[in-house]
Amino acid sequence: MNARDVELLSSYLDGQLSPSDSTRLEARLRSDPGLSAALDAMRESRSLLRRLPKRRAPRNLTLTPRMVGKNPPLPRAYPVLRFASAFAALLFAFSYIANRIPVVAFGAAAPAAEPAYGMGGGGPAATEPPAAAPEMELMMTEAPATEPPADFAPAGTPAPGDRVMEIPSEAASKTGNGGLTEVPREAPGLTPWQMVFAAVALLGGAGMLIVRRAAAQKWLARK
Amino acid sequence: MDEPALIRSAQRGDLDAFNTLVLHYQDSLFNTALRILGDEDMAADAAQEAFLSAFRSIVSYRGGSFKAWLLRTVTNACYDELRRIKRRPSVPLEPDSGDGEEVESPRWLADPNMGPEQRAEADELEHAIQHCLDTLPTEFRTVVVMADIEGLDYTEVAAAVRVPLGTIKSRLARARLRLRECLQAFAELLPSAFRLQEESRL
Image 1 (cartoon, rainbow over the protein chains, first blue to last red):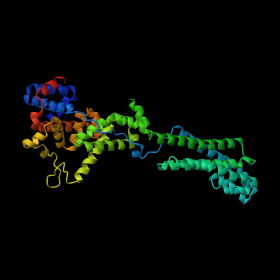
Image 2: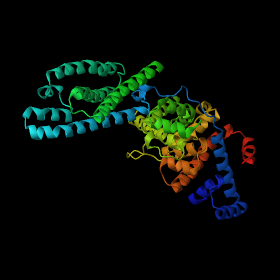
Image 3: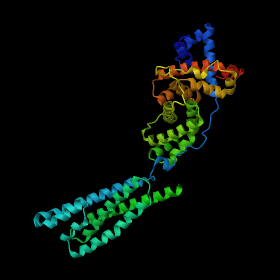
Image 4: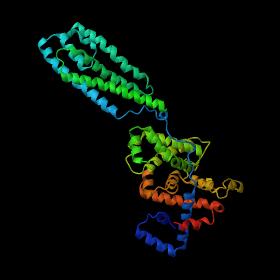
């Protein structure tokens, strides 16, 4: 019996031979007692293996969040909020800059250009006042005072993991942008659309924070 | 158990969904690792490692038999374990021929001339079978464990081991032949009436 025969017998045992090969082998098995005995022996060892007791795992092999170094799972609404918020902030920035460009062009005043850049890059709010009335400064101090605590508070709670830290800062930048959007609300050029964009950006940012915080709390409670 | 839905959830990072799959397959993975490694503690560690690795790479699962996919991860974990053991000379599993080349089949483990005391130690059929499995080269053992112990079909084994179907057939045939030869050394342990009873059903 050669290696080819061994393979034929093994495949025959598992019903893996083509009908024609099976017929041919069966004819040989009838005339060759040695081959037939080899088939029986192989069948027996296969049966022995099949009869081996199935051992059960000595302990549960489930994974813990710690083992997988995992952050709390975020609901599916999260990416939607993130997109809406970012998109609205972007639209607001563009429309705001677009409205300001003529002023820059005709006014040709250097300070007037700065707020435009400041808004576009989400830059420091301090660039705003030179172009604005003194009462705007009041708004400026007000805006950061209300926004940042809302942003930074949750950063501490879903502590484990890098992503946790990353998103709130992302949210902070967005709501920060939103914070800036509050500023020109009193400025004459703010259109209703701009107000809608600003509101969406702000609400989206706030929604992200709430959703994230709820997910973290639920996750920690379950652990 | 809605396996496809659980897999999809796990692919989105849902650990609970993945753990439901773990509970369903843990015995199978452990048993496979046990038959490949021959040691319970190592097998539990390998199965645990396999699940961890499976969770991390579950996004790469693209359909087909999920069990075969999981068995592939546990096989890899077992190979890692075996490589680790081989690096420790105090626990030789497979001897080399003296010139650095590994002997394909370490027959010394299945020495038919072993003394009655040693033979008595392997007085359980299960031990005998495990002993014979241990004598097979790793890739033969893996195939025979998947096909004959875990009941995977040829296609699933081929997918799990990632070798062509023809190679699976030939490895399985040779593994069965070697097992048979090895088990003959334990002939007195084999249930005599079992042979025909078992096969009359097949």
